[in-house]
Amino acid sequence: MRTGSNLPAVGEYNQTLVLDLIRRAPEGLSRVELSARTGLSAQTLSNVTRRLADEGLIVEAGKVISGPGKPRTLLKLEPRSRFAVGVHLDPVVDTIVVVDMAGDVVAHDEIPRRHGAAPDQLVDDVRAAVDRILADADIPRPLVLGVGVAAPGPFDARGGRLLDPPLLPAWHNVHVREDLGAATGLPVIVEKDVTAAMVGEMWFDRSDALTDAMFLYYGAGVGLGVAISGSPVRGRTGNAGGIAHVVVDPDGPACECGSRGCLGVSIEPRTLLAEAGYAPTDTGDSRPDLDRLVRDAAGGGVRARAVLHRAGERIARALVVTNNLLDVDEVVLGGPVWERLAAVLVDTVIARVAADPVSTATRGITVRLSRVGADVAAVGAACLMLDGAFAARPARMMIAI
Image (cartoon, rainbow, N blue to C red; front, side, top):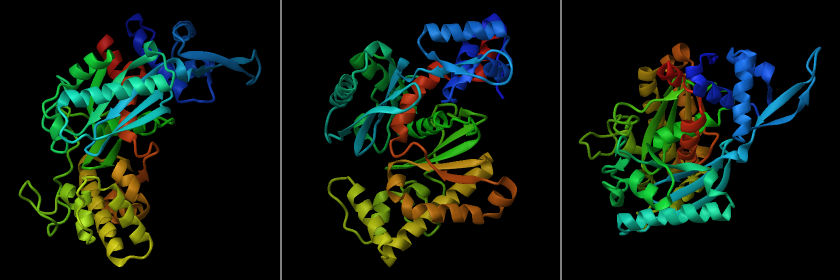
């Protein structure tokens, strides 16, 4: 249990801690319950909740009778007190969402990729989409905390610049934070898509139990978001989570790195479609063919089922290998391609991970689907803005002290 402090220097941490507890309790919490959970004195807690109410972040929401004494006043989150925009830059389609303080999506839009467009045109496309989605949802701009951008790596975390993401050639060396910030007039943060997905899943975990976990993000590429002790792991440069070159099939397809059977090339959409005997698409959009692959497999197609079964085995091998290093207790599966294939893949992945003697007997790992859905990277990017402003992290208290 995270506890607060009565020291004046850590007032900000106490405020975010109390707000986070209220956010995770949709039914509301009384001041007595908050005091018991945080260890804060009645006076400190009263000061904290008053500040939160003054800022419009929480509201009093009725009373509850619990034992002898006066009825207790319940405090609840005011979801529409603040908003955040999330943008996921993807090789096929860019996704834009707006979330409220509860992390719920209140607006959604997509921008089809414009091949051959210059970087400034792409930034202007995103700017126009942000302006449009906020106007359509009737969200006052002063209530918007900022824009979170999720993108494939590698990127320069300190400078907010995409370097040379192989799946986004048009975005090479684009200063996303600076350029999009200037275009929108809003604060912008840039995060690797797999880390954003992990944050999004943690934000939706009302129980606060998702502390040591991996998020296998399966989109146009594949990556791994990691959380340890309740905090996302970014690594020294912010580019942690590269799992694409874990070898899962020594006899698998050749990879550009020189090896064979790397996870990324072994499960990328074009590999699955080629193994299924489908003609390559000219549009670069594999979604219709992936849907067809799932339909063929569900309809009893032997070749389609074999392709997806093999993909599930490859994913499971990568998860077992990485968890032997990280020792987490939960694996979440998600991303846009995963959402399309999940109905056929999930049983194989869960069964193969469960069949590994170390993962089950020693580690007791749980594998489950994302609760956020296909747009988890965009939602997670928006939640990063909320997380940065309002989520309690013990490191804040240590810095304050």
